[in-house]
Length: 155
Image (cartoon, rainbow, N blue to C red; front, side, top):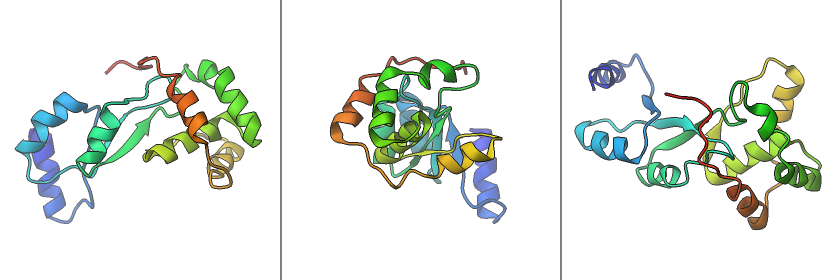
């Protein structure tokens, strides 16, 4: 709470444009939000097809807060399985796009901000090419069925 109050003061002083939280879920937000005058602009949580935060994302959206995916492509050392998933591979092939593009488009269609990290200029460029296709309801449901509630990092 002390750190958040400091961010509120910095925001009021014009030193910040927005403040947010990381790793907050329904219980934490339910307890936290009534205690602060400034609602966070964003909550960043681990979100990828194997950990979808299905209850949390709509709850955060209902509070008027943006949601950002941390580890949208699976996380350090955990990308390989996700990026070779046969369901995602089939959807990617259907649209003639990559699996990361499918995952980022899935986030986009769910209203989740995703900022994948890469030092590879070709991957960075590819990650911006999400608007020439849309996932169908069936494809969104197929990705939803991949949820394992499997966090790839401990925090």
